Image (spheres, rainbow, N blue to C red):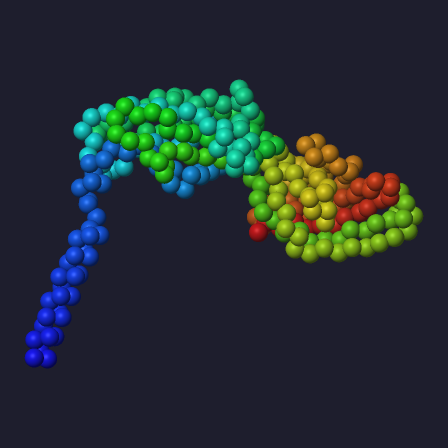
Length: 282
């Protein structure tokens, strides 16, 4: 009797397991029969394109449209896309300046032989300095099938970088004098170590970053001579601040990606500040 109960229990388990498998079985055929158009990177909703600084107009891949490879596509799909600046502003980016770029086409044809197509854009990298730029795209219309609700939009960041842009750590010392010259006497000495800084591209040989330990409140340009790797410290033109200048040797080491700087400026009271600072790429 006990054995019969065990057998019945096992049979019931097999039947229940079979029912569960049936209930949750994925219809693989459905995945291939549905024609869905999407941006390949659209599921994350974001992509980034990093460009080398240049004053010449170039053409780059912006985003890929596709019908997924498994889809049983037997005829062509005409796809129309549109720019969507609301995606850009909602994410805190800035739309590319008017007239600074050209999207090569807003209409695409996907075929059984070529189920994907690249959206390309023509632009001049030197026009894209000074802001966090991005382009938003939306699939607007398809001639057959569906538009993916999860991957119909894509936000593409367009970044222009020179050889010096990146994340750095800064260590050094700031000396505040009691007046406009060294002879005025030292009023204060402040050391700083491992201050995180980001160096932003301004042009092919210039980056902008924080002054000494004034993170977020004072800005300067570092202009590198690519022949000698000597550095000129200048006031920022995009974020006006103190009148800075070299106060000794200023160099860049391309092997270790290190800026070694000696510079000076005058604070709002007209008192001299001198800085020694080493900025090393992370």
